[in-house]
Length: 184
Image (cartoon, rainbow, N blue to C red; front, side, top):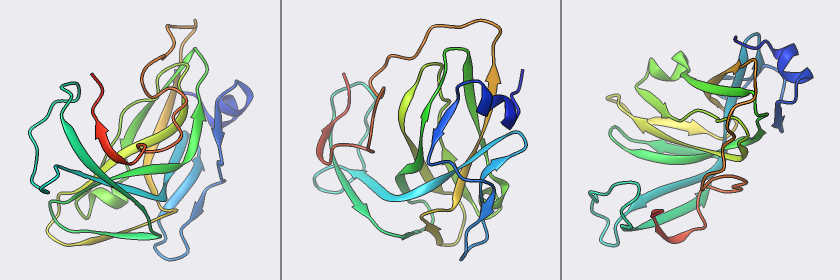
């Protein structure tokens, strides 16, 4: 069953640094609570991944390929067509064992070619939220810290299910910075 905001707040779903529904003062993009879910916001923490010679790399998520991660803080980022950036969201989350959250695109962004690539929040997950953002459109787009980028809908189960206990549990940042070895 999809959970309403009042059910979320009264049943142990904790979104740290959550805000009421609001609009970004520059862009007007909405963020925060709405009737069925939450619009998560981009922070000013970003990262770009590449090989040492800045060429693209053919790598799988678990093959120990070494890539460089440039992480930086900026209030806005220009994303040109075909470019990709990683963002840590402003909010962190603590999920109970009986809830899973699924992402949906915000149509504000899809109308101009921006796609937020993000996974679900598994039951029991606690920590920072990292997403990838890619510009599939024909024009450069400015991304502002504080803009809502991904809408999540929370689904409740009658019983507790197996809890997440993976590599990203209790994460606090995008990556540690410098050279990053993809998990093996």
